[in-house]
Image 1 (tube, rainbow, N blue to C red):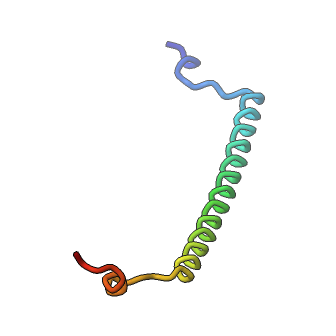
Image 2 (image 1 turned 180 degrees about the vertical axis):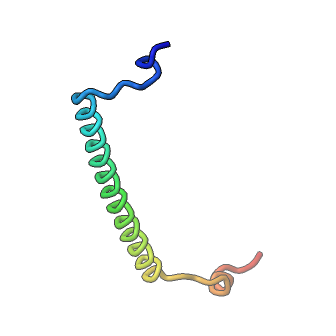
Length: 73
């Protein structure tokens, strides 16, 4: 075997540029994903806050109150 077959070929200029472009695109997609995940977490927090407010405003009944209203048969 010759020395050329054993050493890896150096990438061409176009291959290097294509690789960097793909890395830039990947980084942009990761940044967009992080933004969407952040917005999703914020919206989930708002949903939970609204649920807590609804729970506070909803009258609750205890078992003792229920037993007074319904006679045991």
